[in-house]
Length: 390
Ligand SMILES: [Mg+2]
Image (tube, rainbow, N blue to C red):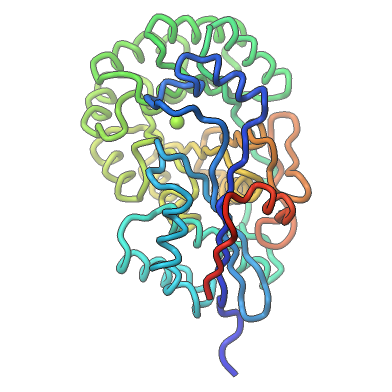
């Protein structure tokens, strides 16, 4: 008889979930068709994801989910599945989900980059640990500090009056932080911030996302123009690869910058922080390599005295992941979290919805992530047959 709870099987399903109709409408009415300034040519009509199941020798199942968008992640669902099937799976199969550091060490040594694929496996391990032990996943992150987490609302790029109307509708629902998509022009950016700040007063927190809209010089002008309106964070004002541009801008403006499209690994993050290119750390759980590396990123930010924005537009599973992570590091964040999946996607692929109310989300109860995958929905939105590796 061998050791128990060894991972024996990996199941990977690529899926596409369309955006809700009103989201598609709002996006297609914006200049680039995506509701933000990111320089893309393709319409964005829905979310691409990979769902991963890890199954142990006792039949326990752990679930992970990764969001993919080529302009940001640089890899497609098929590429993630291929890298797991051809390479990463051999460091997971035959291993215990509790040996997560060993798995990551082996994966990093043998396969460079591929943070999203490694993150997907890591995320599923936390669920499996919880399912095996009948404990919530946050117990494997040090335990939760709070039972509910405040959320930030997303306001797509558009006319200042329209954006103000959307912001006010979120505040009525209990949100206390809004994130404005800017970058159409410095004049429009300023008008948006002015109108919204005038309408909501100074009790509401505002952050902005430029999605790489400006050159470093223009970014300095753009951020100077909105500084009077008390902005918490200015996200990705310059091109994603322009780290020295981020440093140039951060040296000259009073609002802390955050990198999003330009940050994928712990190395990216540490480089940006140590160069002085960011003042707030942005974390998408799957990107620095899953929960384990997200915890390292958050702990590093805390030691550097920097706040953290957790952000993503996931389905139900990865939304729960983000909430467990936020609950376990709530003292380190200092900013409301961004979880736009429930607002954007036509289905969340879980059986019972997460508890969103009054601008907050509750930490789900139960083993692992505390959510159950809806198998019918998984089949409905699958773009190809599930790949089984054992
Ligand atoms: Mg962004």
